[in-house]
Length: 621
Image 1 (tube, rainbow, N blue to C red):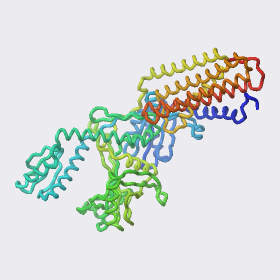
Image 2 (cartoon, one colour; image 1 turned 180 degrees about the horizontal axis):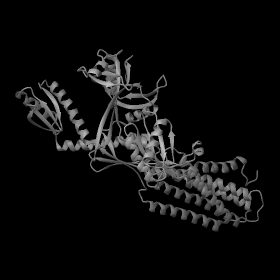
Image 3 (spheres, rainbow, N blue to C red; image 1 turned 180 degrees about the vertical axis):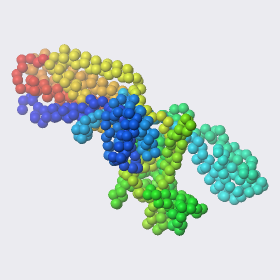
Image 4 (cartoon, rainbow, N blue to C red; image 1 turned 45 degrees about the vertical axis):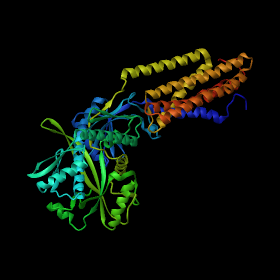
């Protein structure tokens, strides 16, 4: 083999890799369509729902490109412009809000033949492409009400433990009233409560329902702490849920006293994001009352005092004991899967306290029926007399009734879910934890680049001008060799775009573009080192073939040292950095590896094809 000839497999690599990269980078040439996504985690979205959507849009006079089915659970309606998209979203929300989730979406317009080969455009961050912006209102009233209910239960337990007689404990608005049996018992109740809740409650005496009572009201400090904790826990839970969704570089921050802003760049399923962010779902495990007739209770409305009436998903009534065996607070892990009958299921793992508690109660109730209650809170907007009101509704349904065959402990599974999507969503919510208090979406919109469209266009123009100037300089200064370096530069960019498009969850942001620009400079720098070395060999009187060989071989160690040290720095940035720093590190790492391939192996292959098989008196370098 001659010195400046590659074996066939190297030439194949140099040709094949850029061609494959160009194929996977091609989807980025197609613009995105403003779209509306209609989906449901519970029921299939079939032809009947598609016809209903078509009728709604036709009645409103809203033209659309086409309607696409995305599996069995969602529809995607594509529009020509953002105005039609927003009008259609409002119309569909009004008609379908009870059963379906309607969300704004920027759908890639990638041709079907490319999608069939798993070629998709890369995700762009909010600072480049824009994205989805949610503004969520935290329902602090619900948080306060929940806290008072919890404290009321604690007061009952405290008085029983202290053996203090009382008539009852009631929650009235933002107060807990402890009703005494007689005036003489007011003082021991007041002393016990003040000692147990010092600094948390202001305690006074009064009358409630004509009875002497002790009135407890949260102090201003405790109330502020409760509000801060509710916001803080919701922020933590939202971050966990967004991480589960796989969104890169999200922005989740408090806005004002009671609101949280969430920006999701590069999301591919905004309907699911909307569904997950504000959802408050948990589970309760209760024993079934097998002695009473649930159908009679449903017909007459007379429910045994120790029971509560629930309904299964098929509409059948079931009586469950008021006592809760286990709540979702003890769940530390949940994953979706299938049971032995290939039906959707969620596999549950409990913490230590939950495992001990569940083992005890299930061990005592082997062969009895147990019901799993799915609890979800939803918020709807209602217009009454021209005024907009938001109503929070809690739905409780029994998703599974099964006989306890043996003592259950740390790991078990629940079934009775309608679809795999519902199982995935429930597992996600249980993994991420419950929200401290319900939230509802008060604003949902697509947002433009955070730095302004004009700045982005000028930034892209400056990158293009700089790229062209570098290419012109290389051609003028290194002639034919400079043209080969320019070809490698273009291939390098295509490789970076292709890899970014192929990595699941990767998002390109402005810091990422900075990483690309840096690698472009490094790729050119590598070729400059090689070409200057070739010139030096020619000046020393070496033949053109020997100069090419020496230029690439002697410059290789210097180029490798520089790129490897930079790659190590990029890996450290990725490991220890967050957000934009990781975006910079990802593109820098990809660019370094790509430039090593294009600037060394790629240009060498082209130079070999030009000069490797002929005796040239001189080199155009």
